Figure 1 (tube, helix red, strand yellow):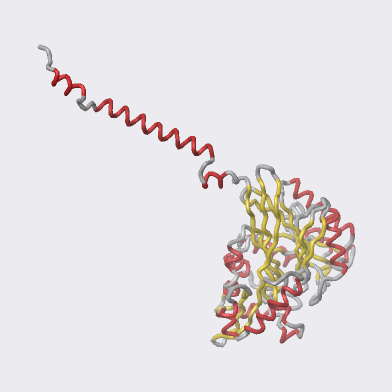
Figure 2 (cartoon, helix red, strand yellow; figure 1 turned 60 degrees about the horizontal axis):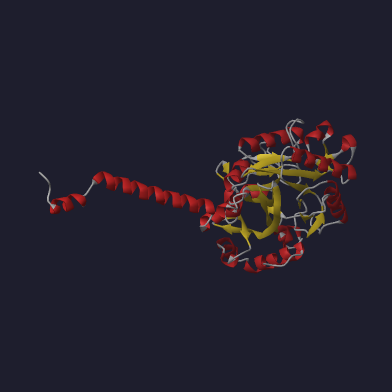
Length: 407
């Protein structure tokens, strides 16, 4: 029996699940295709940002000398232990935020008894404290590296390595490299620490202590042209090992004085024979001038001749050298590296000025490194000591000695 016209119409528009499902699948596929086209065309803001994925930003941060006077060690004592982390309470964020954070050690870990100037030996817990603060490396080439001889130098390196810190400037074996390499976001960064020494030949020494046959375990120079060439050869070796950024750190200069001609001439020699990207220094216990010099490739590189003490008991009231022994800067070396072009495209530096405050709280001596930025006059340590005016003077002095504009 044939269907009526009305029945045929109803059959024509009857809902068909299979057809509906096929239509939905087609629509979903179309949406996915359009989205994929947009993603590959780079039309969105997020996609434009990913087009710069080849450029990497790196922050290598340098702080000054750890001059471990007896008073500093005593202040860190609690029962039978020593904890130095509170001293870094206010600068810890700058250390932690760096990709690589480095400072210089002017002491050794030779065990008890602990001693201060002129022969330094401090608790090895300093190593674990510095690691917990966020430091990645302690440089060990200084005029105090041999205060307890070759044995003390070796003990120091072993304690630092056990704490998870890298070292540089002294080495356990002559097979170890004279540079220290870091890999940051796939980019290799080398740091080369060297210290000045006195004497010559077998009588060359540190802090008037001859190094003898063990001198080959120390990165040292005596300001000769041949020394600058040796340092340049270490830089070349680091480059061959893949370093894209190389920074030289020099322990040099006259204590409590501005940069001298010998330092300036030697910095130019280092630059003349190498392609180092920056030179940073320590030892004078005060800040010295900042300038730029040209390296072997004709590139202008920053030179911070001395960045001051980081932690010490050198005080104006003790040394009569003015406030400058309590001043310092954290130097941030900010690098941009293009992985696609395989080269560094930018290196800029900035400083965070600080003042080392010493005060008494609850009958106990305390040291606090206070960054002189922001509302530093309301810093709890500065308020406890009442040294707002002294800190303000220190900030002005820091920029004046660097020879750069105050920020």
